Amino acid sequence: MAGISNNNIARAIYLASKTDSGESFYKKVVHFLAKKRLISKSGDILARLNKIINEEEGRAVAKVSSSRKLDSDLKKELEQKIARRYAMKTANIIENLDERLLGGFKIEVNDEVIDLTLKNKISQLQEYLIKS
Amino acid sequence: MNNHIVENLKREIENFSLELKVEKVGKVLEVFDGIAKVSGLSDIKSSEMVTFPGGEIGVALNLEEDAVGVIILGDFSKIKEGDEVKATGRILEIPVGDNILGRVVNAIGVPIDGKGVIKGNNPSTSSGLSAYPIEKVAPGVVTRLSVDQPVATGIKVIDAIIPVGRGQRELIIGDRQTGKTALAIDAILNQKGQNMICVYVSIGQKDSKLRKIEARLEEGGAMAYTVIVSAGASEAASLSYIAPYTGVSIAEYFMDKGKDVLIIYDDLSKHAVAYREISLLLRRPPGREAYPGDVFYLHSRLLERACRRNEKYGGGSITAFPIIETQAGDISAYIPTNVISITDGQIFLETDLFYKGIRPAVNVGSSVSRVGGTAQIKAMKKVAGTLKLDLAQFRELEAFAQFGSDLDDNTKRQLERGKRAVEVLKQLQYAPVKTEHQVVTLYALTNGFMDDIALEKIKEFEQGLTDYSERNAKVFYKQIAEKKMWDEKGEEELKKVIQDFKLSFQK
Image 1: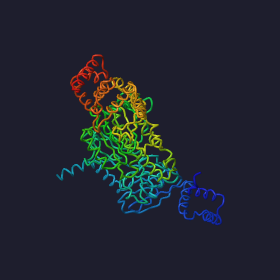
Image 2 (image 1 turned 90 degrees about the vertical axis):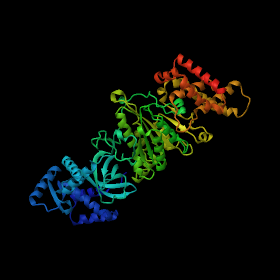
Image 3 (image 1 turned 120 degrees about the vertical axis):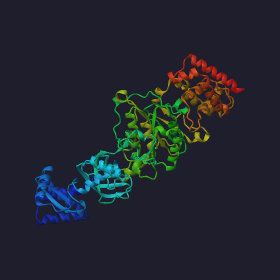
Image 4 (image 1 turned 60 degrees about the vertical axis):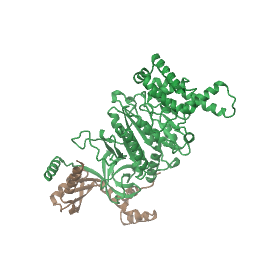
């Protein structure tokens, strides 16, 4: 039988939290993790729990990196488009400023990346020129 | 000059179209011994190609719940934890074109012979190469044709007793230093003018050995129709693992053009060892001799790609000569038994015979060709028909004859004939013999023309006879070349020529 993965534990915590919530529940979870010697893995379990909750609640979390701050209209439009693309109710955007991207922006949702930055375009051009 | 470069660049940039695509990415969790564990990459397929920053490529082998085990093809020292890995959605493929002939490439099809890039078929564009996936399902049964065309290896003992047909898989097996590679190289050298493309896949061999082989093939004019795929001993195990698949993809490219291809895997024992190393690093459960459970499939799916296709599906064939190195003649070890059961026969080389001076050191008793018989030309079948039986009887009698000297005439005759047969089947390295010459020699042997020639003069007699008969038995030679068989007229002529030569030889 395969071992219990962090994903299984995160899902179990999520399911348990539906019936039992409140301060005492979180204490119980911490006790459980300590008893099973899983405290060192708690970071990963928490990240997975976060992902499960987002999924269950129909929320897409997107990391958008750009060289300049996004204006609010664009942000709203992006949120709508991302929610539609991933068939979710809402979308949360986590902004990330990175001047090295030169221009444009890059959207990361789970393990999908849509790279619309100038940096990517230039490196694609570079690759093409080397190849041809 | 500068203007010219700028103009060119301008044109290239105008031709450039930007591709917008959604990419699947993952992050490197750990890297060790040519293996990377990668998180993410949720929709990745098994054997899919991935790219690392810096251009290194990898192949996804282990798909686990929350990580992917990737083998890195190339330098893994530059890859570090946290690097972004991109899925490509494609199975690993290699660039192939007609100009790959005469070249030495590595396991991912990149030339390593210092002769520059491999140009496409159309010289005006540099990227006219076709991309061939290294993993492909073998041609199905409706596309195949049975083996009935011979591969002339130029090695008497093989062509006469263990004949190989186009599309066959014939294993060459033996201990170290018994002449396995020499046999394969001789077979390549003899393909000149036989309408055959050759692919030599070197797996885990010393670079010095490869250099020697390349020089030998070059010298014999064989590089014109040969490609060498090399995964050297100093390279990562992952490259040794994919090298034979790369080789067979190159072979498939030529087969798809209707050509006949001969591919040599030198050797599959090292290939299995490389795969064992990768599997253990990927933490797959070890089985017998620590090989993983799918080591049989590793070789069966490779060797199934050797085939002869019918005309409707484009014709062409791939004949495979896999090589296996045994330890102390143990053919019942795991990998040798596996490959013996996959192939259509084996050529068994023995150390004892080698040191007795019987070279090629083929053990005729243990060697077999399961389908080659139908591919043998009629003339050869006629002269070599009883040879295997004669040799087997000779070995039995030889053992008995050691106990006593009082033998009847018939036994003595059989012994003398056997000794001459062994002598005739000896052959020097890099000296393939034409089919017509083989037929003449074996005709002389099996019809008793050599019985009264002294044993130490057999080689001299053979050499003289082939030269003399080629000049004087023109009808016979013509019949063999055209009809693959002689008629009464041809036989009469040959008999006379042999008798004439014998007279002059004995004087």
